[in-house]
Image 1: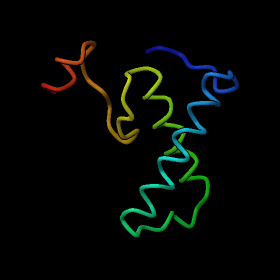
Image 2 (image 1 turned 180 degrees about the vertical axis):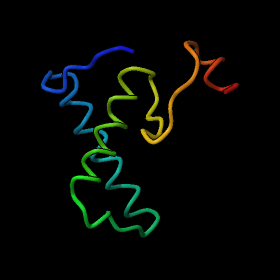
Image 3 (image 1 turned 45 degrees about the vertical axis):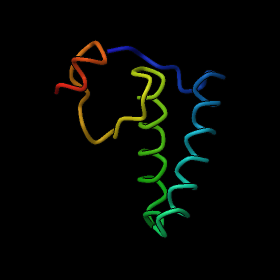
Image 4 (image 1 turned 90 degrees about the vertical axis):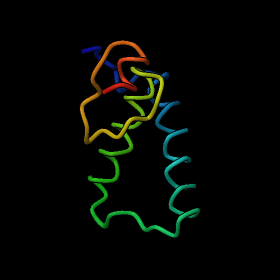
Length: 75
């Protein structure tokens, strides 16, 4: 599995974009964040990490199977 430096400028920029997306989704659907901020941060970090690795913000609660986009869609 590819390693991501969470202190890198690339990751920090993706975290910022992902945080904005998460906030937009909260507003769009009328959802509220989990009261545990550590959970929110962990999910946001996982989404940002998956975006850098796989090119999509796959939910961090699931393992991404497959190396190619076709394999990932089929899984």
